[in-house]
Amino acid sequence: MIEVRNLKKHFVTKNSLFGDEPEVIHAVNGIDFTVGNGETLGLVGESGSGKSTTGRLVLRLLEPTSGSILLDGKDISTISSRDFRKIRKDLQMVFQNPYSALDYKMTIEDILIQPLQIHKIVPPLEYKTEVYRLLDLVGLDKASARKFPHEFSGGQRQRIGIARALSTKPRFIVCDEPVSALDVSVQSQILNLTMDLQKEFGLSYLFIAHDLHVIKHVSDQVAIMYLGKIVETGNSEELFNRPMHPYTKALLAAVPGQGEHKLLGGRRLEGEIPSSIKLPDGCAFHTRCPYAMDICKESIPILTEREGRKVACHLYP
Ligand code: ADP
Ligand code: MG
Image 1 (cartoon, helix red, strand yellow):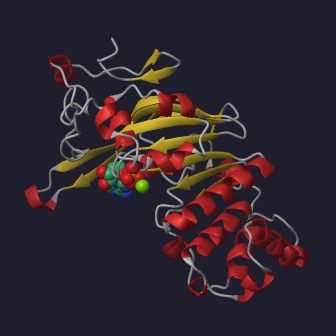
Image 2: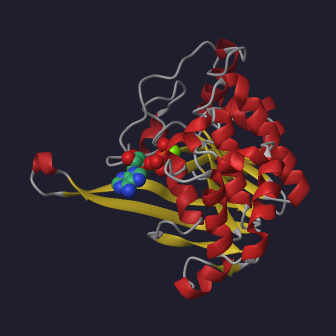
Image 3: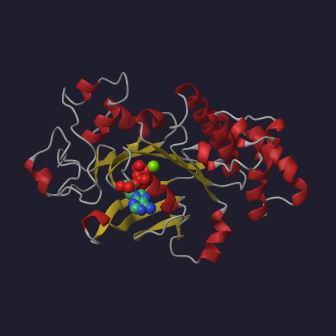
């Protein structure tokens, strides 16, 4: 349904500390993926790896530097904004922070009516019934309609964010770390809700997380992202049971109870994610990789089909 081909986004900024030399941030550096009808692709990586930029590119909230984004085989990255407006309602987003994503001065009813109005989803006479239907879908009662965002808990606010995304009857939703800001006890409720809604409406998700653990139960396919590139991708279960890329192993090892030492053979990941302004030569991960070899410093590994998934690593020549 959604297909992304060699997508790139480079931000050019000025570094005021060192004169006015422009700097190029390689936020998304040539990625490919597809999300099938009714499927979830989990996109995982540390903070700064380019996940949110990817999500915003797909929804055309950002202009790509190059590459294409296809919806049902049609390139939506180059169509006019007039044509894009017609499909805008099919593509929605749920944000990480339910606190800032909702306008605190508006009632829940007004928050939900706004997209109904803009996209002419139902006639004005039906706004109220539609608001109640949306609230019911996400497990909130009718009385919620008259309240303001501050009167709700974090989990309830995320339910409202989901109701707002559903209001336009979308087919595809980018969920950008929708549970990261929530208490662990509430996370699984919201994850279950997103999966129930997916089943009911046949939704497709690009589900972003920095924690592999969160992705496991919701994803059909998983793509692991590091410094703007996908380093490993494949069927969710296979990736969890048999990770191949050292970065995937490190992410799995960071999950409590996954046995860090066994996965990485007693080795550890060193240091922090490098700046995406000055990317390391060769494999961008070699500066932290416990298995790095000479070739990793010189040549960029290509994402290649291996044992039922794709992996970009010189360990698998
Ligand atoms: P993630 O969501 O994985 O944490 P982001 O997509 O937010 O990563 O960011 C990837 C990189 O792009 C980061 O280095 C970030 O600082 C940079 N970046 C994101 N948005 C912008 C922007 N609008 N202008 C300049 N740099 C940006
Ligand atoms: Mg992000």
